[in-house]
Image (spheres, rainbow, N blue to C red):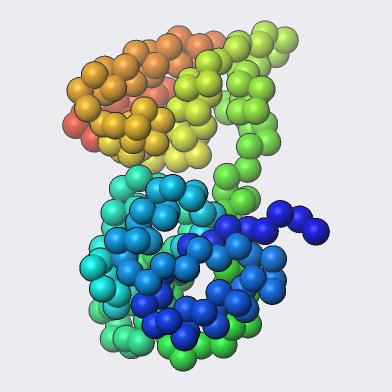
Length: 226
C-alpha cells in the first residue's frame, strides 16, 4: 500500500471532525485534525501537509484568516473551505483569498473525497518536475541543468528552483516577497539583494537564446518571457 497522503483538517465541531477524519483514513489519508485556527497554523508549519480542509467559522482564528496567512507563504498547497454559509459574497471571498474549492454543509463524504483527489491530481500535474522546453533550452529541475544543443549548463540548487518558479509563471510577474519567502525564508533587504544576484546569474546562463528575458518589474518582482 502506498504511503498515506497527509491532510490537515481544521474543524471545531468535534463530532464532524472525527467523522471526516475516520472516513478519510479508510481511504489512505493521514489526517491531522485541529479544533481551532491557531493550532491548525502551527500544525501546517510543523507537519507539511499536502492539502488543507478548513472550516470557516473557528475559534481563535477563522478559516479565511488562516488561508490568507498560509497563502503568503505557499501559493501552491490546495485549500478546500467547509462552511455552513451560503451567501455568494462568502464564496467569492473564499476564492479571492486563495481557496481552490468550497463545500457547503451538509455534504457527503464521497463528494469531499472526490474533490480532494481532483485537487491533489491537479496540483501534482502543475508541479511536475519533468524536463521542459524553455525557448531553445531544455531545463531539467531534477538534474539542475540547462541544455542548448550539446552545451549543458549546470545550475545551483537555488538557481534551479528560482528558474522553476519563473518558468512556472512565464509571462506573469512573480512577486518578490513570495519567492524570497519560498526560497530564502525571509523577504528582508539582504535576501532581496541576494536574489538580484541570482537573477543576474540566470540571465547570463540564458543569454544563448536572445528571445528569453527576465524582466524586472520595479517594486513588484520579475517576469520570464519567451
